[in-house]
Length: 634
Image (cartoon, rainbow, N blue to C red; front, side, top):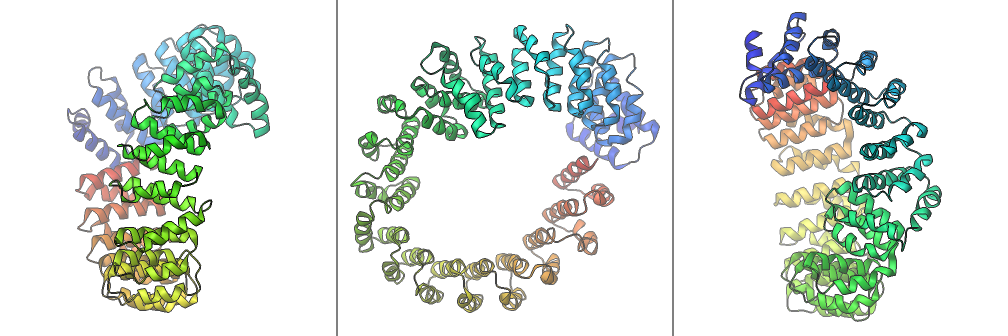
């Protein structure tokens, strides 16, 4: 044990990690050993050793609690703080009285740790003790108490918190706390808070306001939050919120963009465009622009020419989403811009606005060098089929007669939106394989009575990509008549066609396919075998597990891992029969997959086998996986 303790303080983190793993694998530890680990917390100049001791004690869990509690009166205030932090991480509810007592500890760091870890415990019984602390004068302790109250999540009397707002340094923490536990009663405080002159307090109030609003019914949110916020429209008090839109904290920006959207003031447009640079926040910005409505249009139009490509692309999307037909001229001009992102956005927007003549304008982008732009153009043209079916039908007729196979393929992709099965049937016989494949895939979505016949014929096409499309399409169409063709396709010479046929049978969901699938598995290899196992499990359920269990002995590690993944969802009966073989499998990926599956299915019952596996494992990735699982169960 002394040598192990020495290794826990080694300069190398790998050595320290290994030492902790060996220590934990030796459970149950003797009382002397646990006390020895606690003593390591006293090391004044080796942070790695202290961290190793903290990790070990946390993962020892309840077995270390009694030993730790004996040290809460230790003369060393640093040790007392470590012990409190560890008890909080373990989450032992029986320690609550001891942590409450530590709120009066002579050392300020220990008092703060006690408050923080009472919050981690989340026990409402701590509430009156924490509220009492707020009556004192220790400012930093109050910060910790407010955080703890937010974690516990119980309602807090406003008469306790409201007077604390006189202390400017506490405002942000109070608003954060109200955001976590507040109800409709705290809304007046938060609505006043968004007018705060202090930026951090104002932003915290806005975040809290939106959090409380999200917990209200729609009618209450409108009456108690939206209408009062609307009174800020056109006032000077809004300026502070607009200034805050230039920040970097995405949680704050998300809340602020929602607030200014509810207010609906056009002055927020520049700030919202800045927030939209954060991809995750664009959806919220779009909703806020809807709240501003037509008041945003003049600024969007004026900013468009001088903005960079990313901002112009977002403005283009806004013009389409908000139905601003006044921007059609800018969008058509943007289709010829040098920036692919803008060309794609303008095509998308025109697809939504659907002005007359737009199919012809967008059609030019089907030759665009950017795949993103070509896909946006196709999607826009599909959307235009609703308002301009005649224009799109004429366009598709031209594309279908084009000498370029790429254009005929575009026609095959667009024709389902017009439900033109007749023209698709012709393209399904095109001389180019990519056109035939696209037409076959599209036939599954037009509801043509003779579609199944065309798809069955495509199963004997000379090109594998067409046969693959046909097999997938038959599964999508469904019906008893497609079963036999898909079973015949299992004999195809191309493994990817076989795989597509298996996926089609899975989509079909007909158990009558089981004999054919089982026969294929006897000779299948690699991806075909993996797909076959998945089809077998989907169609046969637990009655078809025999071949899947047999696949655990396959020589292809990917097949074995696929079988493990399937069996993991069927219960734990299979684990004991193959445990030894899979834990000693020559491929590390199989061992890691089995360790995960065993932990998921057996849960705490897997601990003895995981500990044994950790002692024998040589691969660092697998060892790390096992150690992480053991940490979750401890």
